[in-house]
Length: 260
Image 1 (cartoon, one colour):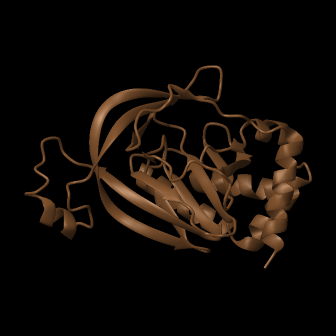
Image 2: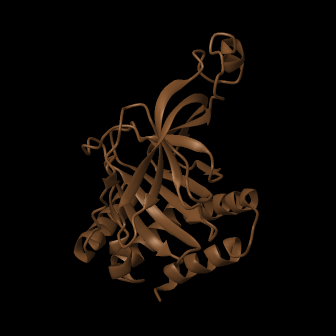
C-alpha cells in the first residue's frame, strides 16, 4: 500500500531492521536508516507523496497528534509492532510546556535532525545513599553535576488499554546525574538504546524538523519518567488528528522542506 517512496521506505526498514537483532545492533541499524531517509530531498519526496493521500492516511492520522510540549508527531510509516517512522515538527512559540521530562523508551530509537537544531541531555540514576559531597569531584570528571544530581519524582508510564492515553504510576523519589549535553544541528543523527535516560528540546526561532524512528518488536511494557517539577496527572490524553488535519500538516511540512 502506497506510492514509490512509501514502498521504498518500508523496504528499507524491513531489510535493515527485521529480525532478532541485539539492541545495540538495532540502534546502529536505526541510525543508518534515519540518516538515509532523512536526507532533505528523499524526505521531501516521501512527505509530498503522503500529503497526496498515499499510504493509509486514516490509520496514520489516528496515531498522529500535537504533543504536550508543543511539537507535532506525524506518523509516516507504520510497520506494525516492528517499526514506526515519524516526523517531529517543533514549532517556535507553539505554547508547549517547556523541556520534556527525563525519560527512556520502550525500544531502541534513532533521530535525524532535518532542519533547525535540537539539544539533548543524557542522565543516569545516582545510586541510593551516595554522598554527594564526597563524590562531587568524580561527578565533575564524568561530566555530571557536582551536587550529586537532581531530585526527581519517578513514574512508570504505560499505555491505557483500549486507548492511546498515557498512564503514569508513581514509583517513588530518585536522583539523577547529568552525564552528557549535546547540540545537534541539521544533518546530525543520534541513536539510543531503550534504557537510556534523556530529554530533548528545541531553542530555535524557526521550526525544527526531526525524523524519528522507534524500532523493535520486543518492546518494554513501560517506560521510566523522571520529573523535577512535582506530581503528574494519572493519565495524559492523546488527541489524534483527523485526516484533513493530518494531510494539511504534511503539506505544510513539505512546503517547509522546500523553503531555503
